[in-house]
Image (tube, rainbow, N blue to C red; front, side, top):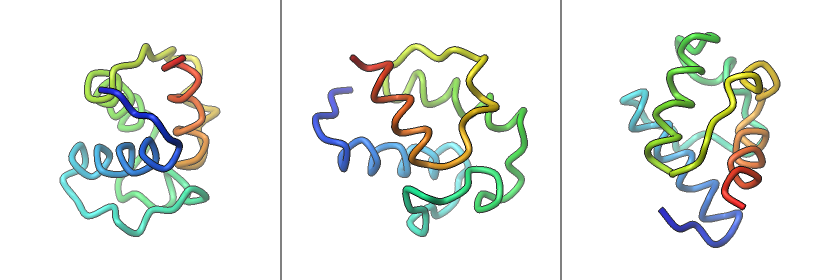
Length: 84
C-alpha cells in the first residue's frame, strides 16, 4: 500500500483499526488513546492489531514497541518511520 501524506496515513490507520475491530472508528483523532478510546483494547489485542496493520499497510512491526504506542499519532508516527 502506498501512502504519500501524513493525512492519508492517519486516514488509512483509522480505517484499518475499524476493520480490525469491526467497529466505527471515525471518532478517533491523532491524540486519541489506543487503549482508552477503543473498546476491549488491551496489550494482547493491540499486538494482534499491529500484526493486522502490518499486513494491511505493509510495514515491518517490532513487537518491542507495543508498550510505547499510547495514541493514534504514536502509531501513525511509528508506521511512517517503518515505511521509509
